Each structure stands twice: as C-alpha cells, then as structure tokens.
Length: 279
Image 1 (cartoon, rainbow, N blue to C red):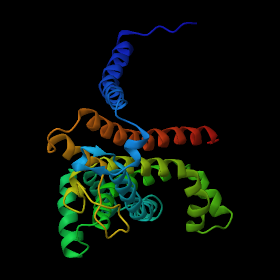
Image 2: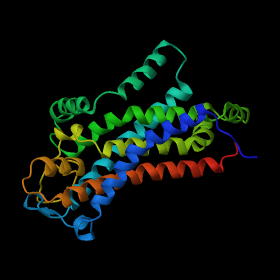
Image 3: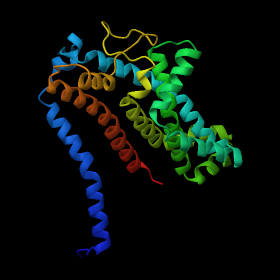
Image 4: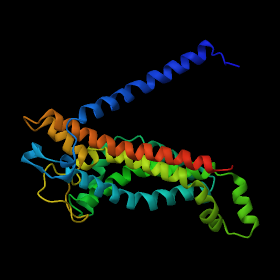
C-alpha cells in the first residue's frame, strides 16, 4: 500500500532538501572547477616561483605530517578521557562540570586555539614554530570532539554487556578493555576521523605555530617547519599576483578530496560496522 505524506512531512522533506542542496552544490562546483587543473604532475611535484608553477606535493606532505602528529596526541588522550568519563567517573558535580566544559570547548573559535598554541607550545615550552607546535595546537582543538565521541560510543553499549563481564569475574577495567571498547570501536574511530577531517582544513591554528608558505624541502621531523594545503590555498588565492585560476581550484579540490575521504570513509565504515551488530 502506497504511503501518503501529509503537509507537515512534506514540509520537513523540503527543508531537508534545502539544507543539503547548498553544501552539495558547493562540493560539486569546486570539484568540477578543479578537474581542469588536477593531474599527477600537479600533486607529485613541489611548488616553484611562489606557487605559479610546479605542483603541491610539499603542502600535501606537510598536511599528512600534521594529521599524523595530531592523531598521535589525540587518540590516547581523547579516548582515555572518554573512557574515564563514561565508565569510571563518579556521578557528581565535578564530572558534570567537566562534561559541560568539553561541550563549550568544542565551540571555541579556532583562532583562539592558535593563540593558545603560540603562547604555550611555541613560546612557553620552547618548541618554536614547528610541526610539533602545530600538531599539539590542532590536538587541543580536536580533543573535545574525540572525548565526546568516545564517551557517546561507550554509553551506547548496552549495560548488560558490563553486567555480563562482571558476572564472569572480570574486573571493571577488564570488562571495558575486552568487551566495551571493541563494541564501541566504530563510534570511536568515526568520531576521531571526523575530528581529524575538521583539523585538516584549519588555517588559523597553524598560522602562528609553524606553517610556512614556501620551503625548499619537505619536512624531515616534527621539529621542522612545514607547508600545508589550507594555508597554501589562502596565500595563492589572496597574495600571489597573476596566479592562474585553475591552480587555485585544483588546490581547493585536492584539500576537499582529502577532507571528504576521511569524512565519507568514516561514515561508510561506521554504517558497515553497525549492520554487523546484533544488539
């Protein structure tokens, strides 16, 4: 029997379409404009003449280094904090205050994190303008998202899983590490990847913590300065006279593809894992 939709349901569908259409149109438009400039040579050679020629290999490699450094910090601290809040933190005013603080920190403008990173990592701790300073700054920005995603994923695991583990003689930590965490891994990894995707597109936090517009060589360690796609795109689009338009669009398309790969990949993998679950 064919279902009939009333006016309220149709209105909701229309609002959903209107909400999705602008970002979807923007993605399609950017990728279409970028197609003309994208090539293997463009993504596999270093930029020359202030980006007027050559490719974008250095910004791509710098962005990958940045994401690796951020992940090395975010994963242990973010997942660990999420486990504590979901499984071991007492239900008191301090815990509620920490949870509220995490929600508020997730909404802090990224430029504030950039100033924090400069004051703490570049100046106070003496790391200087480097990959490690920028990675730690992006980790601070991403940490609230990963903690919240981890906590929510663990909370979604049925209480009966914990009770069964305890009934079999497992300690609370053994139950968490062998039963709860494996059951929540899809939500944790998805939240982490979405947080990393956000960090990959940030410019303000890395602007004063280590990024450079042009460097003669690729980064060799976390103490090196680096190039990154978001900052490279900003500079060639606003401060390099005579920059070919197709190079700008190709750079934007490359950054968009990197971010979308993480976001779409995380979503697809999460849905595949959810279909395997029997609870």
